[in-house]
Image (cartoon, rainbow, N blue to C red; front, side, top):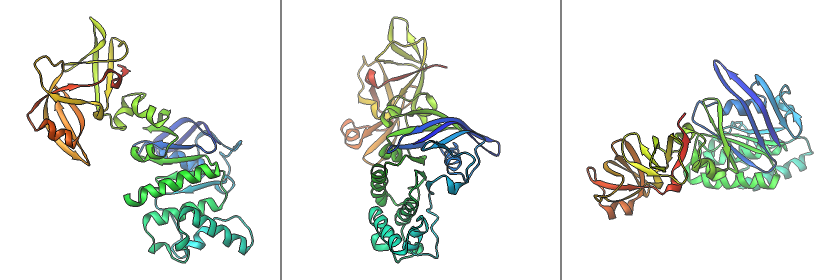
Length: 344
């Protein structure tokens, strides 16, 4: 288990923390946030390659703050793998091994190579490997030291999209089979949601929210988390005095909410929850299409309410509705899809 209590890290004039976070054995926690949020600083402080300014970092019951890195028994994998270029794959993996006779070490190298999917690459050198293969080797090297915890710093950022899913499967399987507590740092929310048992959102050095990925996505703790996780539609509103479940948007129109509103509020609506239909005279909220942006099999539709509002619509629906710049459409959102935050 990893347990961080009041951990603070200072680099130049930037401070991360104080931060409290618990990662149980066999749990995969993703420390998620934008670039420059302080995520890697936290990881480096736990690993011992950077000094913590305050607080505790307990691994398997031992506070490792103050211990040198080699006594912390953590496996650390960086985004570029940092393999030794002059060594073969087998020698790189063996470098992490703790003792054992030659035959035992060779057997362990072969087992780890098989586990992470590089058994056929043992005689090759890092320069001949793809990004995904290098990260698999780096993971095997980290596991060879029999760590008590696994720390991953943007391990998939240099991996081709085609190889990313396979490496994600390897990481999750290793976490489960070895019952290791894992902390994985990334700025990619899609990567986080694919891997995490729990997400911890770090923004500007402060931990804003922790929770299950779906809870964090659907119920962000504040506007900063909502925007970072792609909600896009973060709108100020006030309660309708005649119906406390109706929010009057600051720039016109209204949305119904599932629960009663405070007097002033911030509404968060994910673009995929915005539904469009042909405009009708009695529609409570109408908008004008101002931009269409293709995103894979969907189209991001920018609307003017008159304030800006984004909808993410399947491409087939765009064709069915005949959406085009300048078209007026009716906009609706289910009350349960409107997340309400305090106005402060």
